[in-house]
Image (cartoon, rainbow, N blue to C red; front, top):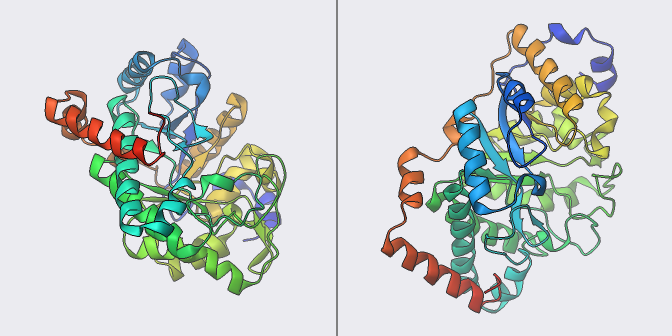
Length: 364
């Protein structure tokens, strides 16, 4: 079904083949009465934090505990990659950009992989300790020294190094009890434009795009990715009408069928300029879900979020299954082990920090 067909269809009668839910946000450092009412809506499967939601480690623990009391089943998420994309800063380890691993990898691959695993473990452990369940990471884009939005967020300039380093970093996440979400499928590193502000077009051939897909393909085959977030980029060689996030060709034919991905597809933020081609927020929700997305992410606009929730509610009324992400929440036992840190765990954390600091991968 094309986007034009979507926009002209009686949307509230459409049933999706896959479970669908919403990832929304809140405005401040604590829950308001309005937030509590808003979050009770069962269409909301998760919440994403921003820097505006963070003041200190103690405040964050209080906020996540309050959220758990309101919605025990909700997945609490954040963009916490390191470098310039790190929403929680003061009181958290400050990680260097992931591109810092590349030079170490070129000199000593095994050391770089061990350090990447350390980095993933430390980042995930800190988040879980503060009640946060998931970071939308790693970035699997291949850097080509042209993108305004990717840059040093990428692990490397070639597919082999990105795959190896991201895989090791994911091993660290997993050892802490956290799932991984690879982004931005099928690859955002070769376009100049920032999809937060405009609609990028990647005019490369299918052969060139296949190279960028390699990290996703390899990590899917290794069962390393619980989720994938597609790019708000148009790739005319594959689908000239839709961005990847609104494209059934990309999400169903290529990602699901050809690559065999069975996890959760998270839309990138539906409020981004690159998503505007999908219509208003209600229409964008149906366009993304019809293309194959499970989790509809909408940020920084409560009115828009309610439109997306209304769309999900209509999908559920038409027979679409509700997306339940409670299984992504690190187990109570695991979280308790980290919160009740033993001397041995303290020693492990300090040893990991020392190794990362010596390599220039965190601020000492």
